Length: 321
Length: 306
Image 1 (cartoon, rainbow over the protein chains, first blue to last red):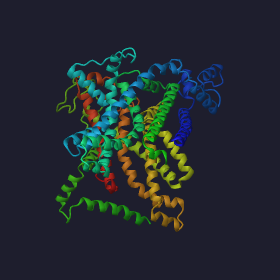
Image 2: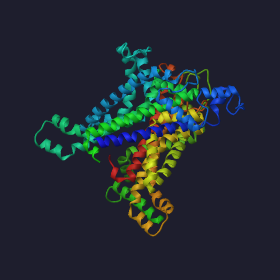
Image 3: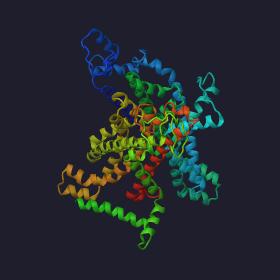
């Protein structure tokens, strides 16, 4: 376990550096010196005096002076010290804009992942146990439909139905979980459910095929031959073996959920990181975009690390290969 | 050597057809009915794909109104014979806008999938063929690439280059590329161990020749499969970008764009504004998914029935 742990941790560091380089290069391929030109009030491509003192000052302020490699080192150094740069839209530190939103997005994500796994695994087990019955068909076809639906459309339809049929009013005011848990959940539960529901489709499919595979194993037949109760066979023999490969999906789901979250935050007008990201993209606020992409990538890498370690802990076969 | 490859794939197709055929040669109708019943989803998928492509190509002929035509005497008109899917809050015909929106969805879907899987396939082929250091580096890069959520990667690219049609296509292609690399790489690794590749190498075929003449033709099947299954994802990403207002800009109608802004406010009164575009996205994505699954079954008998 220790060698595996060390090997896996060693892989994390260069990947994180690679990702940061990737993001930096991507955001510095902006054609021309667009950003600076824009700041000076001109349109991109318009002539400006690159040697003027004011221009140099602005560059310095935005961290755009010096060679590219120097800029990169400075950006990364600052990033790990918690200094994410200055937002171009309101000239405030990027971190100050992100900080109040992180908890909301984090909570939404945790709720969504939990719901996705609960719905997906329960649905998948039912679907496999009742193979080729109407329940199985309903579950499978609805999960297939869910995967083909755009998440935002599903959310819009649900809102419209709730509003039109039950006269539901979307709760507007968001309160922090610790201040007012009931209000907080009333705001977040529906979006989390909708994001989770879409992710659960893939989990359902994988759980189903995994359970079906295990049901055909010899040890399950042996358990049946011994005369064990069906529930006991399912709980002790089938589920423990079948759900293990499903945990590997967690890494993918975290990545997939984040795309969904960006959209759902916009649909429900929740002021999370995803919404900030969309605003920053629309305003071409590069420091914010850069910081959020880096932040998201780090969360994804960390989530994958945790999933891998968990899997190795649960399944000894991984550790020793 | 090319003939050998042709026979291999032709054999696979024939074998598959034989598997789907009942014993004794059936008549035309009997065969078609049999085929249709056993490949029902695939046939439906193919049908949807064909209808959508035709809609996109002949949008000008099919749409009864121009997509930007505003009719203030018929604002928020319910679906009727005059306006099949009703009109929106500007009095624009929803059906005509959907028909024209198909054009953007198909165009963006096709070009981004082609570019993404195409470039991905070339990288995957090289990576899988040479193995070793090249492969290790490429795979680490793909890992990094895949740690960006699709929509966030696409949005970042749009932020950098602007939301014009070619840039949106490029952004979506970038999300598809790493998957293309993965799949073509594993196919390449499998094919490079086959006897005919060994034979080609032993008679002195160069790396390039082996890759182009012996390995590449055999990656066509996984290439087509991933293209059709990624098509749906591309359409969904495009719809997402448009919904956020960062896809292709107005007045070009796009399915995602039709659901954004004021559409949601009018929806409780006039649900047809948002119901139909979403239904079309869902049906199209499903069609491509079914078609992709059927292709996979056709090319890879081991996966059949899963």
